Image (cartoon, rainbow, N blue to C red; front, side, top):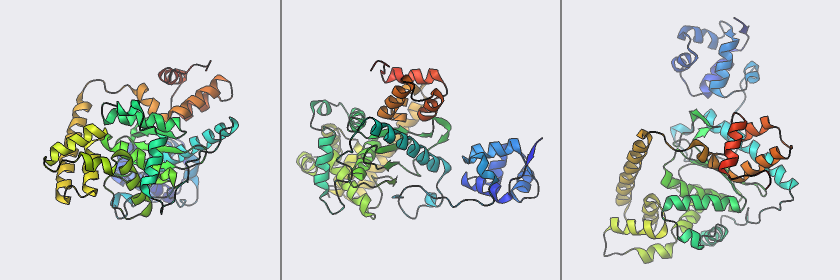
Amino acid sequence: MMQTIIKGEMVQWSRRRAGLSREEIAHKLQVDLDRFIAWEEGQSAIPFSIAKKLSKISLIPMGLLFAETAPEESLPIADFRTPGSQILERSSPELIETIHDAKRKQEWYREYLISQDFEPLPFIGMYRLDDDPKRAAITIMDLLSLDSPEYIQCRDWQDSLRFLINHAEDIGITVIVTSVFRNNTHRPLISDEFRGFVLSDSIAPLVMINSSDAKPAQMFTLIHEIAHLLIDASGVLDSPLLSPLTLPQEQWCNQVAAEVLAPEDQVITLWNRDADNDTNLDNLRKKLKISRLVAIIRVYHLGLITASEKDRYYSDEMGRIMAAKKKDQEKPGGPDPHLMRRYKTGRNLALAVLSEVASGQMLYWDAFSFLDVKNATGLKEIAERLEYSSKN
């Protein structure tokens, strides 16, 4: 068996980067614990085949394992998540590499758009934190055509979310919705670590939503991230619905998102003080096409319910959502993975890749990498789902 000289420090770093104990990594590598400890302490050389597995588990390029010392590693964009949470002490390799992967795709798409003579988007950075959030909310509502008959006719928040994603893409924002790293179901993105991130850019802005988060909360996250683009602020986001309003960027973006989805004047008008809270919350949900979660947080911030009522309603609703999610998971089949890819890759980005492949400007291998598919069949399925034709 071929042995390779990798310093014990690098073996230890790769384990810690993966967030695993010695016992856990030994189990994943299918080796004896004492043997792994010997590798980590530099007492013996690690087999090349095991080093490859270690590289895959920790999402570290194989060549980097041969470095003398572990590099300083941090998130490549600002961190707007709640300080003090234990889960934030070390970012997972899935989060770090998902951001790097999104930046790689964004850079390619930016160059593509420039080659197609696309102009900078006027709404990127058009506001500052001392501007009125209500003005910014009106801007987003106009950009996303929230006064259109199509949006007004949405049956519920799920239809509304699809509408918002499609219209965000229409105005030039790449929206990626996924719960796994690069279509690898064995590498989930944990919603407790982050709810999404945004990469601001005047040509090719990108928003990523972690779909492992409660689906009713994703609509608020999307608008919150678009608000980040209005102030040209890239960053990783915590739960916008419940995060403490301590960071000025998050406070401002929260206020914008709340006003977009549940305008204060409409909420006050619809709130019937003679009716019970449950009836009022359901009325807001139906009339405004928002989730009950958003309704609960919005009326709390407007002083229509107390903190204890908010906590109780929110807990009850999350319990209902989790029960429904578990029930869906127990059903045979599940969502069409190819249909979901429409949101996993970003509609416009995927169409640009397909166009470049069809014109011979991009190799199939590169297209597979960009769209996270294994072969031409996967590429064809994406084209069919997006109703793409090379004659377009």
